[in-house]
Length: 138
Image (cartoon, rainbow, N blue to C red; front, side, top):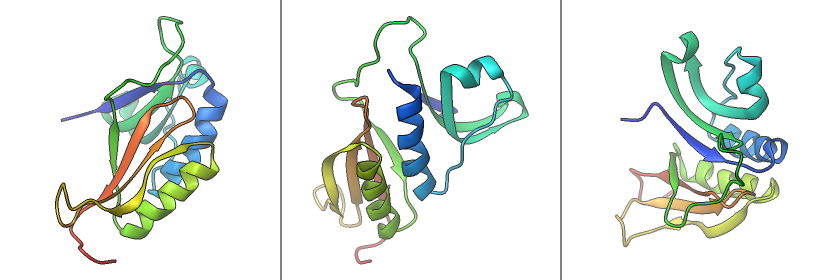
């Protein structure tokens, strides 16, 4: 359904440090576009190949309209984890890299018996979830 998602930042260097730490825990590496101008104003993690023909990535960058970036009220990006440990590690890495907790790692049985998740906000206020499904115990 998606090819990419983009979140705004007011400080690309700070956002890059945050996402390098948090996305690295999930096994996502930085995208290399080869476009010096684009890479100057944004950074991405995931897949970016063949000039973007093959793309599944999360990007952060300065808003094109040059207005300050803001976190959307009710907006959230949910990322997939392969284990409860990855959820725990993502939450810890995000907090260590300047994020804030919106909900510690744990089961959320109100959603499903196997819904293990954690919630954070990046340094710009964008809300992220990391979710592991398929297990009811570690």
